[in-house]
Amino acid sequence: MNKKSVIISTDPGIDDAVAIALALFSEQLEVKLICPIFGNVSLENTKLNTEKLLTLYKKSPRIVLGSHKPLLRKSINASNVHGKSGMDGYSFTASNILVDETITAAAAMHEVVNQSDDKTTIIGIGPLTDIALYIHLYPQDFKKIEKIVVMGGSLGRGNYGVLSEFNFAADPEAAKIVFDSGIPIQVAPMEVGRQAKVMPEVSEKIKKLGAIGDMFYQLFSKYRGGSFATGLSMYDALAIGLVLNPTMFDIVSTRVEIETTGLLTAGASLIDLKGYLDLPANAEVAVSVDPKQFEEWFIEAIAKTI
Ligand code: RIB
Ligand code: CA
Image 1: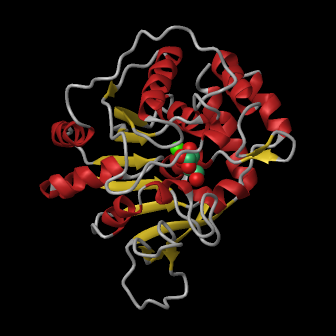
Image 2 (image 1 turned 60 degrees about the vertical axis):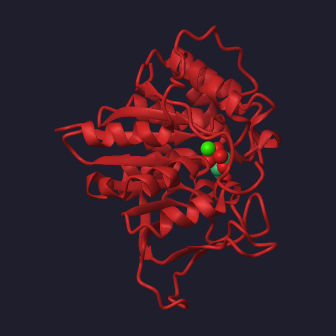
């Protein structure tokens, strides 16, 4: 079967590190481009982290530097969750892979989408700034985009703001551009990341899955997206799961609106499951995930990195 052509916009980020590996080592996907972006930590650090990860993974997809800040607002970060470097807890070897800084992420996405025979799936597991810039600049590419799959938003309360999840809070205007685009969208909101926590016994199994599994285990020890003892939320892995193993989710087609004008609510995702807004659906939202199926898939997918 033809491998699915994939682009990943990411802000590594401990859960991003896992998600990138799940995609790179999958036999179903051809990761054609990875674009590090600001987010969990500064662009300088997400760039370095991407270089370190791909060196350790011994994989060499095209890597092009993304945006260093949101479209309009000041940058926020999540170093309180991922550590100052964005991947605290593990001493990586020197990188031998460098990020291309000679072209923008949007232009690189345009090149990759147009060089692919098949349609391309674009995965956003950080702020959506570069995906928004790409679709704003190249509307002629829409017919060659399979779908945009994002980890972001929340069915209820947020994990960064009272009502906003981090990726959408980091660039609300970018998220709005993506959801208003009319391109097929799938969303893994933060709740599915919390339903499918990585429990201690799973972390112990992952530790034994080769050098990469051991690296994940060491990163998990510093990760503050939950706790080692009560379970870790691997948010970004759920977006990869939507692409690779969608049957483990309950998915609902509905309207998603992004708040951009609220003084206190910017970045909130209004996932309109009850149709209050009386607007046509613009996204498929994973409203729940089977934790057992996720656990089995997650361990099997990480085992492919050995
Ligand atoms: O809210 C979780 C999201 O924010 C994840 O993508 C995590 O890596 C952070 O970027
Ligand atoms: Ca992320």
